[in-house]
Image 1 (cartoon, rainbow, N blue to C red):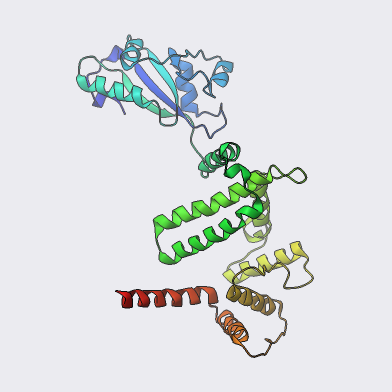
Image 2 (image 1 turned 90 degrees about the vertical axis):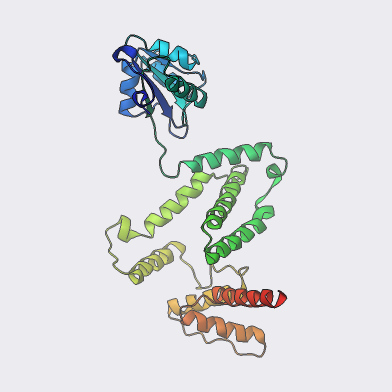
Amino acid sequence: MNATTAGATAPDQGRIVLLTTSHRVAPGLLSWPAWQALRTADRVLCADGAHPQLPYLREAGIRVDEAAPTAEELVDACAGGRTAVVVATGEGDPALTDGLARLAGSGRVPMPDLELLPASYDLPGARLLDLVQVMDRIRLECPWSSRRTHKGLAKYAIEEAYELVEAIEDGDRDELREELGDVLLQVVFHARIAEEDPDAPFSVDDVAGTIVDKLVHRHPHVFGDETADTPEEVREHWLRTKAAEKQRTSVTEGVPLGQPGLALAAKLVSRVRTAGLDVPLPSGDGIGYELLALAARAESEGTDPEAALRAAARTYRDAIRAVEG
């Protein structure tokens, strides 16, 4: 905002710069306009004596007064054409900006130019740092969370994954955002617990680093010299690099037996087909073999049997509700 739009101004009334910084960016990493404003200011003020930027500003030779002026005091500090910079965090100091807005609206005093200057910006993914910090504190201070283990949390990972699938199938965007957050929480929670392992600790950074390395390695057409123009070629790259990484002795390795039955059957059939093996379906009486054959048929037709069955079940649920009332 600029005070020239809110109240009377005069050329010698100076300039107020509200300098906002992000706590998610390493202290000292400020934009060039921010450094210019700081170096040319007649006075730099900061109400927070523990502000992470203060040591770096002082190291750069900038004098910072630890003060929390009122709007009136700040306007007076700019008299005679002087510039005052207020170092804040986040979106600034609401009390101060509200006071300046009221003062400008009153028309009682000439107002300095008022500028909101972001000194540092969050990069994409910056809020993940907040999640890690919140999880650290919860792990330390919450009586329930501080006692959780990987095994104790396992069931929640399954529940949250199913709720995410349901949100996707419902097409509910708000629910999707929330459920993605719940799944992300499981990852961060397990990573936080893993840090405490006395023998083989790892952190959320190790988790992220592992998946980054895997994605880069399995996308040589993006990060390397290979080319892929179709989804089929991408899949070939992925399977080839994955096979080289895993060095499996059987196509069944890495297939979790605890997953839902239809998904398990389809995964095994897919592994057999991809490997080019000739393994006939087992014959036998009973519903299990019939379901296995149906799962194999669905996989061969490019249909997810679990998703197909859920869709049919939802239709059946709607029919039940219609009858009920």
